[in-house]
Structures are given as C-alpha cells and as structure tokens.
Amino acid sequence: MQAPRRAPNGALDVTVAPGTAAPEPGRRPAQPLKPYPRYRVSVQDYVTFHEQGFLIVRGLVPPEDVQELVQHTDDLIHGRIDLPGLEPPSLCSTPQEIERRYLRIHMLHRVLEIHERFLLHPRLLDVLEALIGPDVMAMQSMLFLKFPGGAGQGYHQDSYYIPTMPDTLCGAWLAVDRADEENGCMWFTPGTQHEPIYPTAGREHANHGDALGDLPVVENVSHTDERVNTLARVAATYPGREVPAIMDPGDVAFFGGHILHRSHHNRSATRFRRSFVGHYANARSFTMWGHGDAEGTPTNHKHILARGDTHLPYGQPRFGTACAANTPSLRGVGTGSGALMMATMADGDMMSTAPIAMARNDPALHDHDEE
Ligand SMILES: O=C(O)CCC(=O)C(=O)O
Image (tube, rainbow, N blue to C red; front, side, top):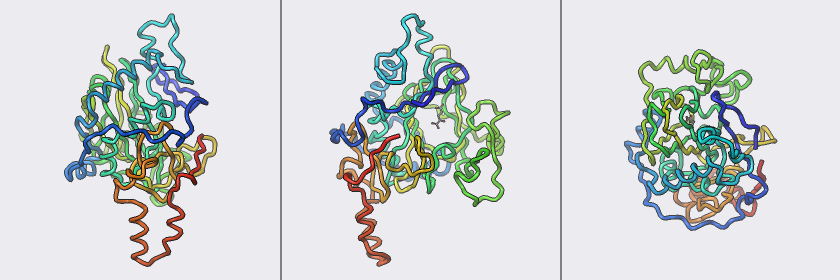
C-alpha cells in the first residue's frame, strides 16, 4: 500500500496493493458471466459524447448490482471486510468517526473480487467498446465514499494523471447514491474536451511532447481553491458552460481524459455520495502508467484486456472475471481482432503476417509481474 494521503478534512485517500493473499493474475479460471442484455450505444449517444465531452447513460447498471455495492461499501466502512492496509475502526470510535475515515480507495480491483467484477461490468464495457474501442483495457478503479462533509476535487484532466499514447483515456463514473449539487456531484465543462492536457512544472513533455509550442504550465491541478489551481483560468474561458452531472444510482457518466471536471465538497449533513469509478483506454494505446518501482517502463501487461484484442501485451484479471483476456469468445466482441488486423495487412501486401502472429497475445507468453 502506498502511504495514505490526508484529504483536506482529515479523511484518508489510500491506494491498496495486493497482499500475499491476493491471487496471482490469471491463476483463477474465467468465472461464468452473469447474463446482461447488451447495451447498444446510439449514434446520438456517440455524437453527444464527442460534442459535450461526456455522456450519462441512465440506469445502465441494474438496481440489484448497485445494491450489492451499497452493502459492500457499508461493510468496508464498518470494518467487516478484512483488508491488508485498511485498519478496522477502533472499538472506541463514534459512528461518525467510523464513517468519515476514508474518502477514496484506489485499485481495490486488485484485492477484492467485487471491484474487479464492477471494473469489468459487461454493461460498462458495452458503452466503452462503442466510445473508445472496440479494443478496451481496464486500468484503474477508485471507490469514492465521500461522506457528509467529505472533500471535493478541484479542476483536473484525467489524462494528465494517466497518459496513454495515443491518448484514448475514458472514465466511467457509476453513481452508487444519488449525486446532486448538495452532496458533491461531478461537474463537467463542455468544450474543454478539445483542450490539450496542461502540464505542471517538470512534466512539460508528458502528454504532447514538444508538439505544442505555446502550452503554458499550470499549478496545483485538482486543488479545490480556484485561486491556486491555475487550470481554473482555462475553465474561465468557457463562461456559463459548466454543468452538474446529477445522477441516480445505476447511472454512469463516461468522460474523456481531456475534459475539465471537478466536484465540490459534500455539504449535506446526512447523505453519502458514493461512486465507483473505472478508467479505461483503447487496448492498442501504449502506456507507462502504474509502473510501481520501475518508472519509465511499459505497463500494458499490468492492465486487463477487457474487450476486443490488441497487438500489445496485456494483463489477466486476478479473480477470473470473464473478459477478453481470459475468454476467447469475448475477444471477437469488438471488430478489432488480431485476425482482422492480419487479414487487413496481408490484403494490402504491406508486410508479412508472421511477425504480427507472433506478437499476438498467447496467454503463455504473458509477463504477470505486478508492482
Ligand atoms: O468523484 C469525484 O469527486 C471526482 C472524480 C474524478 O474527478 C475522476 O474520477 O476523475
């Protein structure tokens, strides 16, 4: 586990790492998939995603699944789940102290089966396949607990934190509770999806290299104080455009990696604002994000191939959630199968298909090292 950070109101923002009890990726056989009706994205949904930079799909995740997350977060908060790195509440804590210990927990999908299952939820992947696919890799999971009084997160762009090349990052934000202005819902600024990723000092070359000659450096991204978070100056060039994402349980907001977004603190006295957030990219994007100790090295092999196929290495789910990485029949869901790519290249007679065949992902060739 990385050292926990303190959010402004004292709650913890933690990243969990698999302990010795967590299974090695790929060891568990693929688990049978609960059947869901396939969600078909409409052309209008697709256009909306690109026009406004985000798309809310109402009722995408069924109520019984959301209820499972409600129960699970309750168990987590009250220490009924034994998790290395998360201390159970002390016996003398008040109910309020128990509820307000954790603001956000990262990467639980590497530690708990239920988080892997939600990260690879077929209904989320149906939408991602249409928006950024057909080949999709699942990279990050976050559980927001955002209790009454819990801190918000100031303006930021997700591709600043998770660079992928080409840049295809997309977040999927699943509402577990109703989210509105009172309990600190997400806010998006349509139009800013066309902005470049603004670097901070020392990261000038991270996303765009030297390609943009006049790209200014910003400061304190994600800080909730607009006077110090200078991305607020970019947001100010879109007056009146920012909108709250008011969502009911089961609704999912999909948003690209460039759009400026934020959330305010939870000013309700009694309501939580829980959400499950996954981050994904096209599985043919290269990434070095999530490197652990070996900074500056490729990390595609750590991220799960959720849908379609890829010519790059990919990771397996630890708990065997059925997805393209462990279920060949799910590879073909997208049109980006290696076979199609081989056929296309062979038709064009541009190169021999043999090297491509060798680069295709044979599970036996995978590097399963974890950070
Ligand atoms: O849920 C929040 O408050 C912020 C989430 C967010 O900004 C993100 O997932 O990128």
